[in-house]
Amino acid sequence: MSENPLTEISNGILLFVPPSARIAGWRRSGNVIILNNSDALYIIDSGGPSVRNQLVMSVNNLLSNNGRPVHCIQTHGHIDHMAGARELQKNFNAEIWASEEAIPFVESQAPLEIEMERESLIVAFRELFTAPSWFVKAAIWVALGRTHPISSVKLLDKSSNIKETGFHPVELPGHHQGHIGFYNEDESILIIGDLIDPRHKMKPILTAPSSDFVGMKSSLEKVIQIAPEILLPGHGEPIIGEEAVHSAILKAQETMEVSQNKVIEVLESKPSSLPELSNLLVRMGLGPGDVFRRMFIHSILRYLVRIGKVSKQQSSRRKTIFSI
Ligand SMILES: [Zn+2]
Image (cartoon, protein in one colour):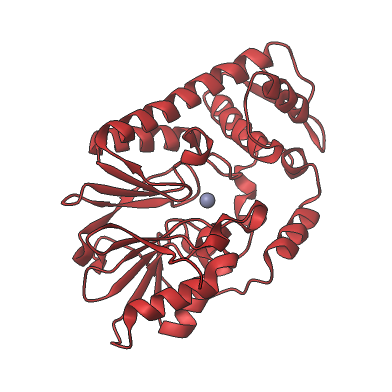
C-alpha cells in the first residue's frame, strides 16, 4: 500500500503530493490542488510526468463513479505542472483551462518551448544553458519521457465557473507568461503556482527565459495586499498563518532587492561573459544551481537593460557583455 497522496487543507480543498512527486531532478512534480467542494471537480495544475498515473487514480477515487464533470485549470505552461492534463482529458473527459498567454504552452506540452521564449532572450540561448538548444530539448525529453500535444485548451476568463468553488483567478505575473493564481476569500487561501519557492528560502521563481522581474515584484505586492492566511505554493509545503505568509513574501522581496544589488555590484568588476557573471555571483551566495541562477540573473539583467541602467554588447554570436 502506498501512502495516501491527498492532504485536506480545508473543507474539500485537497493537496495532492504522491511520493513520486518528491523524486529528484527534472522529474520532480509540482503540487496539484484538487477542489472537491462543488458540483464539479476542479484540479489546479496537473503535475509532472512522474505523477500522472497516480493522479488519475486519485481523481477516480474522488469521483467514485458519480460522473461529476472534471475541470483542470493550469496556473502556467511548465511541464512539471501540466503533464497530467492529457490523462485527465482522456480518462475523465476533463476540460482543460488556461490563461490566454499560457494556452500555447499547455497545448504544446513541451518540456521547454524555446521558440515561444526566444523573443524574451537578451542573450544567446547557449549562454543561459551552456549547451545548444537542440541538446537541451533532447536531454529534457529523455529525462521526462515522451509528451504529446493536447488540443482544445479553453480560455479561462472572468465568466469561468470555477467561482462555484469559492476561488477566483488572480493574475500573478513574473514566473512565466500568463501565470495565474486563485484566491478564496472566505477560506483566506491563495493558490500561488510558481511564485516563490518554500524549498529554497522563499526565493522568487524567476527561472524561465521569459521570467519578468517587474511582474514578480507586482505579484509579491499583490499577495501582501490580499494578506491571505494560507498560501498554497506550486512546490514545497503550504505556508500557514497570516504572519508566516507575510514574512515569506517579505523574504522574497528582500531576495529580489539583494540579488539586484549584487548583480549591479558584480557588473562593476566588468565580467567578460554571463557565465563569468554567474560564477562571481555564486561567490556572493546567489544560488541554487547554475542554470537556474543564470536564468534568475537573466531576468534581473533584462530588467536593468530595459530601464537603461545596464547596457549590453554582443561581442560574438554566443557572448554578450553587460556593463553599467
Ligand atoms: Zn513553472
